[in-house]
Length: 201
Image (cartoon, rainbow, N blue to C red; front, side, top):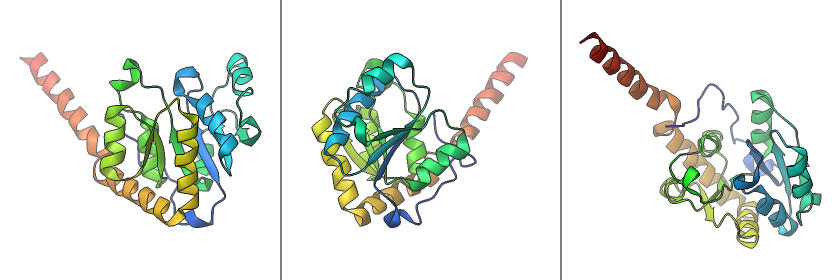
């Protein structure tokens, strides 16, 4: 599984309720990541969407037409220190990929990063992803192309900080128990050992 690594996701949510209304994302910046809908949603959100990644000129021009672009801050490409700093000042982590076959059959590392750092999540309604979020009670599931629904979910979390922090804490517990690389790497090592034994035979 594409779980997050404890050694790289070092931010924590101890000061969560003191943070400003920042919604965050760091990763791929292309159409099917659904960020245009997030930018549109920001027009109705009392906060700032801070995002990072490799933003091409054509996609930037498209993003700049979004209704809420004036509430967005592009941070460029960040290293892990920069990403953790972003997570450490944010109130909501968003992952809004379109529900397409490519994503339906995979789990996004971003989801587990947010869980690792104790951020409540607004997540697209791809069935496998939604199940993780709903089972862990760590966020709100939305239609990736519905800006109004995204705005309502983000606003709810911003306006209910105690409940939002509880969701973040739930995600962190689920990460510690299940969704971390340390828990999963032993399975990979076992596969390697089994392949090695088969080759020896």
